[in-house]
Image (tube, rainbow, N blue to C red; front, top):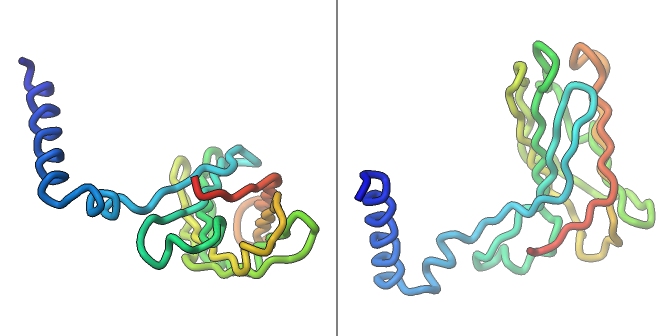
Length: 161
């Protein structure tokens, strides 16, 4: 048997052993956070992905889909993209009826060199009452980067799985 085959086999035996020792319900809880992909694309010199963070853990499992959105950005063309002064005012989120939804910026983004990513966590209020699909708009202030980043993501339909 090759070395990598032995390693994979031993790893699987180890995981099955843990599963038997802890019980299936505990393994499920250990792997309780999931990113559900919602949209992806590219605009200007930035590629993006929008994900919905869902959970199987106790209190978070009752949260409606879309309460936690994760926006990933990757600089695919500029030498440097400065996002240090981005605030929640640079974002807007509308429900399917065009009503503004309240959002909070949970993690301020960091700048990105060419090829580097930035991750932005957005918390959305009252998602259970909002009609779908949603529209997210992110527009930086002109002084923030070499070029203005103006990103609109339409057709967002958060879901549990």
